[in-house]
Structure formats: structure tokens, C-alpha cells
Amino acid sequence: MPGRIEYAFKCMKSHPGLRPNFHQLEDRVDTHLFISVLAYHILNAVEYRLRQKGDHSSWATIRDIMRTHEQMTISYKLKNDEGIIQHEFVRINSTLEPEQLEIYRKPG
Picture (cartoon, one colour):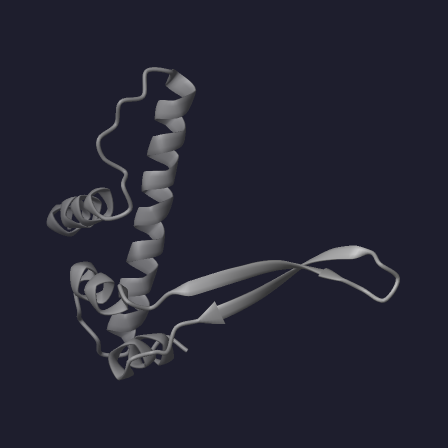
């Protein structure tokens, strides 16, 4: 399915900032290509698992629905009873919209 592959790369390059590619060193070009191919495999796996559950949404549609779901990490320093400062982290998720929850639930 060359059309799906081309469409997938177009979606990936426009969203995660994989374009433009101004690398001049071979290692950087290779890394850029590796990340692009890895992203394609992840994209394809997500679409495949959703299709198995009857959801034939395109990657662009999935991306648009999921766009507002965010994870944030809050870091702060805390002094314990012995006076030692510890670095603490708290992970917070934004509230899921019903469409987002459905996308997470379908693949299991």
C-alpha cells in the first residue's frame, strides 16, 4: 500500500517536527531517518490495533482527537526531617475527553 505509507510519512513529518531536514553530518541524517522509520512503525501499530477493533480512523484524525491530551511532570525540591533536600516528581494527566478515552480503550 504505497499510498498509506506516503500518507503516514507526510503526517509524521508535519506533526512531530521531523521536517525540514538540514542535517549535514551522516550520523545525524541516519539518526533522523531511524527516528522517522521508528515513528512510522508506531503509527502503523496504533492504526492496526484500532482497525482490529473496528475503528478505521486515519492517523490525522487520531492525532487531532488526541492533541489536547497532555501529561505534565511537576518537579520540586523538598527538605526532609534530617535537612536533606530531595528532588520529587509528580506526573499529572489532563482529563480525558470521551473520544480520547475510547481510543485508549479499544486496543486494550
